[in-house]
Length: 362
Image 1 (cartoon, rainbow, N blue to C red):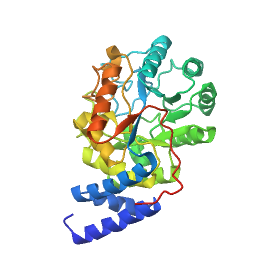
Image 2: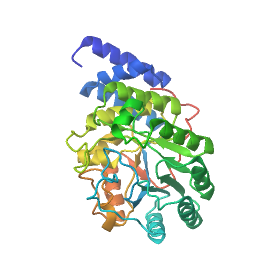
Image 3: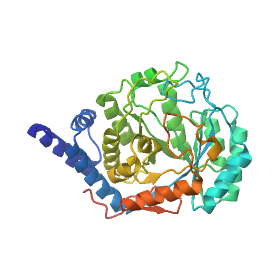
Image 4: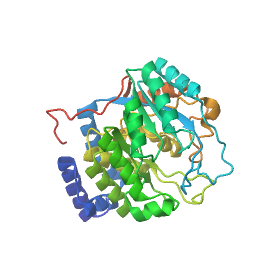
């Protein structure tokens, strides 16, 4: 770091965060202001040490099944927003989805993530029947859903059908920024209501936010870190903003690997046992982005089990990788990539681990 004072501030914040897993809001902002190659290395070193105490060198896999590119929402950053008349829309049948899960099981996946736009076709009845079929076929597997905002009753029905985990990125902990990214029909308060309902019902809950998106400042990202500290999610999926050519944010620059990895390290120190993906978006903006994410403290990857014919149609952002690979190829490629940086894909459900009794902050 160029300034001696900055170095002192950073080391004080690093020691406090590693030791107490918490900072004041203004301290999180100062930590972000201290980003440099040197501070990123120091933060990652502490983060990896804490993760290894909990998870060793295991990287958990989730078999991702992208079920529908229809969406009733009009989020300004998303390629499958309803106003994108050029989007290629598809919707997998129940048979196709179950077949994807069956194929994934044979490849060693023990967690399936069913993800889609907020497609009105997937009513409570349709989705609960689908979850029940997968649960009956694979009782030893975890079923994760990511279908956006629904009613509490809906979440309860899906939980009883056999879904155990739910991913709902909060996107940003700043209400003002949330309004700038979303149409008036969506609200920050409702997103928070959904997350609270999921937690109370008993789901393992995943949150997450966008890094480097339009109008975002370090103060906003500091609020995200404070939200994660207070909410205590089981999973946290963050990824760099990647623009899509057919959205109002098409002309904005993408987020960076450097800032995303810095935040991954910070999240690991906030929550040493959180399940933390190295996302596809990271691999999209840098060839070794997912490896860099693992080396910063992440411990989850999500190979795609969706039919290859539809992968390009789940077009959230431009340049998405792995759209032409078969499921086995994608898993094999990721396995080799993880081995290249000293990690190994685990074949199990990848549940959130409790902190070991002898856990010590490093």
